[in-house]
Image 1 (tube, chains in turn yellow, orange):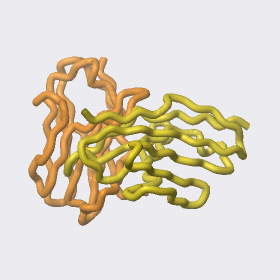
Image 2 (cartoon, helix red, strand yellow; image 1 turned 180 degrees about the vertical axis):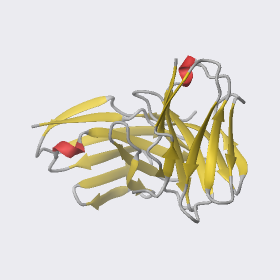
Image 3 (cartoon, one colour; image 1 turned 90 degrees about the horizontal axis):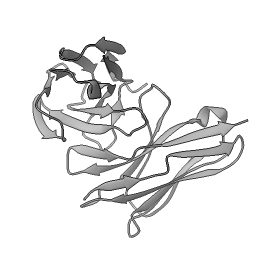
Image 4 (cartoon, chains in turn yellow, orange; image 1 turned 90 degrees about the vertical axis):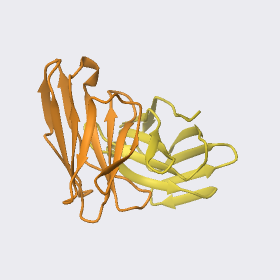
Length: 109
Length: 111
């Protein structure tokens, strides 16, 4: 079957580093996405990994290991505005995406 | 700004009623998908339209239907509303690349 697992909630302190993990099981693999979603708002694109390794984009980095079915999103120098849900998603077939339940990150002052 | 707009923002309906949600995509985004997101959950795929035809459907009953128009707008229709249909409904469009561009959603409450 197809499944995505990620932690439900995480808490971190402003200025710290946090790593949000995602494990997935899919039939076929066409990349993995991370989206950020503030409460009541649309998910916004953060990263897309197709190949193994780390991709860095400013304070955010995303890692993928296809052999392990594992990815993580790394957030550095946390800011209060980073408090949001972070969604891991994989394309399934040619027309739909499977999303995890999302990880709600709370950044404390 | 994703260039994808949805209306209305919020909607309250009663059980058994019908509802139509609307989405306007960016020019050139000929693929549109609809997702249902219950509170505390990730988005669940409802269906996708490509060039005005449905080309994929998730595990949703036939009372969920849609339309896509030539002007890059689309609709999600839900008949015979049930309490469990209360959720955030997200429209997402794509120009053919893997990335999805989401609208800010319609929050539907069924009483």
